[in-house]
Image (cartoon, rainbow, N blue to C red; front, side, top):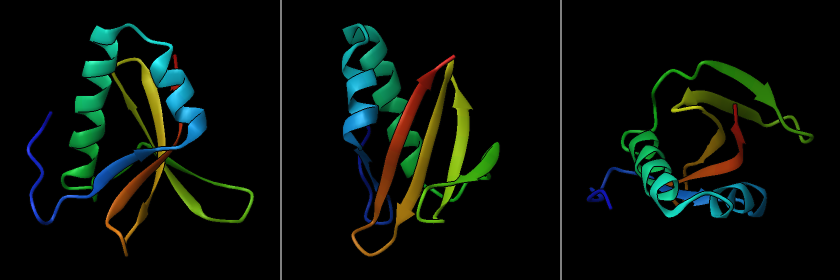
Length: 88
């Protein structure tokens, strides 16, 4: 796994995103874990587009390696909350 630095965020998968992640082969899981850590270090890259969840929270969406990662930053615990993972 990627080395975590003090200013990096920790990627955290929701149960919905984790279900998609766990359905993949071990090789794909390793590749997507690296992508998740790359998104979290540093997490302030410009997303491909934004959406909002049911509470009005702004979500970032990034297309990487045949997947769309949907996430938001939880700044207090320094977590990148991956709420959805969609295979294209």
